[in-house]
Amino acid sequence: MEWTATSPTNYVPIGTNVYFRAVPCPEGVAWPNGKPVWKGVTPSSVSEAKTIFTAPGFYDVTAECGNVVTAKMCAVKIETKTFAIFPVDRTRKMLGVGERVQVSITPSNIPGKWQASAGVLSVNASSTIIYTAPHTKQTVAVSFLVESGITSFGTDFEVVEPALGYIKALAPALYYETNMAGAGMVLDVAISPINVSFSKVEVMEVGAKATNVSGYFKNNTNIPPAVFIHGKDNGADKWIEIYDCNDLGEDIVDIIHLPEPWEAGEFTMPVPARWRVIGSEGTNTLLWSDMKFSIDADGATTVEKFNHGVKRSVDDVIVNVF
Image (cartoon, rainbow, N blue to C red; front, side, top):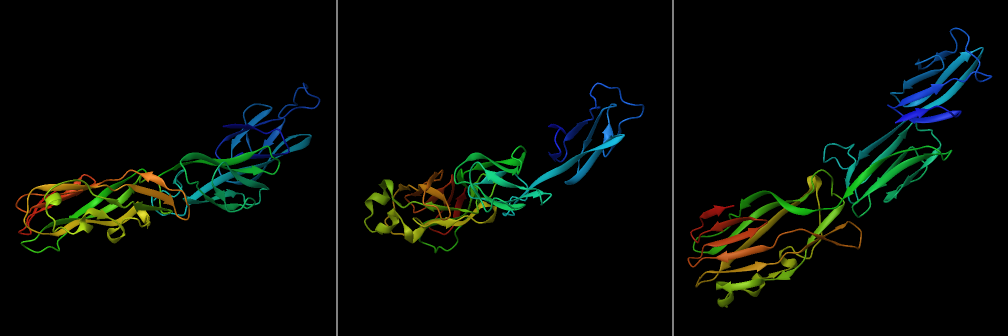
């Protein structure tokens, strides 16, 4: 971006070319030899000069030819810093929904006010403000309008929503006894994308009942009915806040004490999921994973979720981890 100094006070962003022109009076008269004399800039011709202000602050640029004409300059810097310390780049311009950012303008005594195309500003008139991103994905402009109403400075933020859950780590559950059918795993669940913070978001698995019940699970009447319900007793229908690094914490997927006689069978537990910004009423669909439970005729049991799983034999041997 290039700027030309044409008014008594000029506000310009740091790091950009600023051009100055001296006009003789009366216009069209030739300049005396060696005039004008520029200060604060580098002459590019007899009547023109330019500079790049690399640090914020107030500057005087002068041109002298008998009298001295001064251009009052203010080099402006906008800085942003996320409150979330993960991801480590706290100057990033991509934010999670509801994420908070400190935005500041230097020099601090520039008259004017802040404005945003969406989201919430903590205050309007201050050198440093707190900006809270909106609850939906969009591109947002946050800017400082100088009091004259002619010049503004700011930055754009790209606000993104939670996309899906994924597994960072998996471990077989190891609390079973021999001669007992069952299997389990402990999943470390996180939310993507990982280049923003969702620390102001919470997630809920919506309760449901088993579907596609077949074989052993359909025929054995000694199986407790609770096995076929995903409710509050096993983690559903509860809002869970997302931690730093977008971790959701441990998710235990298991089925235990399956009574004999065994035969092959399986069922699916639907697990729809929702997300919302903490404190808001509206909820949104989150791409998630159902759970699948199956058993072989010898009692070997398999649990699956997020395309991962564990298979365990009745001898308490982990047959497979995938």
